[in-house]
Length: 229
Ligand SMILES: *[C@@H]1O[C@H](CO)[C@@H](O)[C@H](O)[C@H]1NC(C)=O
Image 1: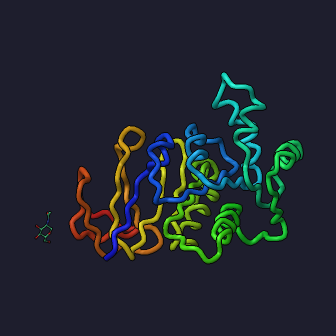
Image 2 (image 1 turned 120 degrees about the vertical axis):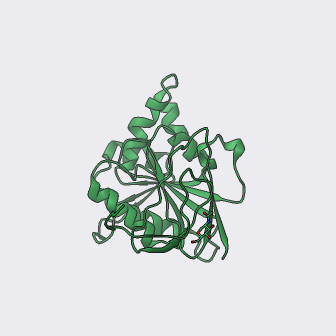
Image 3 (image 1 turned 180 degrees about the vertical axis):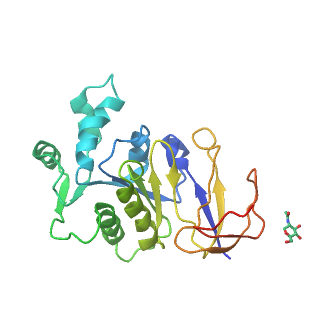
């Protein structure tokens, strides 16, 4: 089986950047994680989902308290604002469109979430290119309303052939497709020490790990299992 490697180098300053991966950033309408500027600098395209633009406008200057707010807003200008347009404030939309941000109104589509729309959009930006080196980082995908959180997790499955990472201040999650073996390189200066494997979507017939404190050896895992230990 082919090996898929995972390494959160996007949490390190850009000079540690591994050039084999192209990052895109999606900002959702949740408090900005403190490391959002790092994700921003690694990303080649930055998409705000609707009210996510308010978060960048309001909260990015708070992450640089000694800088002028206007300077910060000009420095962290979204490439695209996309979604329902029922949350982004007019003032924010005007500010960024004047700086050249593209606005893509999707209010006619009420069947998919803002995150789904943003991921589909990024996927279609370069229609025929290989997506295996593309990794979409999603800021603000976890925490807050649980139905939104669960909907965001479902997007991982809807786009299971793409690499998506959902992030909050407290954790990051991604799918480990059963089509691959997985090697996870921990950036111990910025993540860990805990790591959880959750068999959502379907049971895992056999999971074997090495390098964890309590490894699994050919263990079956399923969500909703009764603990008989
Ligand atoms: C895993 O389990 C098999 C038998 O089920 C055993 O032979 C093997 O030694 C175990 N490996 C480890 C690393 O414990």
